[in-house]
Length: 74
Image (spheres, rainbow, N blue to C red):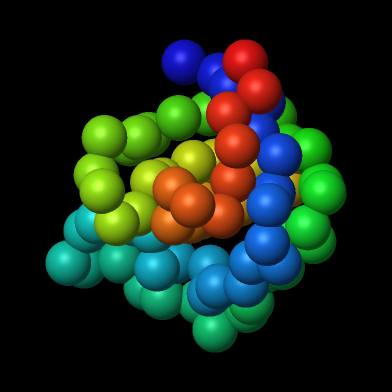
C-alpha cells in the first residue's frame, strides 16, 4: 500500500534501524527529512503507537518515524 505523507517536524535517523531482522547489517549512514517535505511511501507498518515504518519511494530508504511527526495525505 502506498501513501503520501507530509513531514510535520524535522526527522533524522540511521539507515537500517527500521529493518526487523536480527541478522541484518546496520548502516551508519543517516537520513534526514525536513518539515513540510511531502513523500510518497510504501507502508510496512502503520499500526504501532510508537513507530511507523515506511520506504521512501524516491530514495528507496526504509525508515521509521513517530506518528506525531507526519500527516497522512492520502
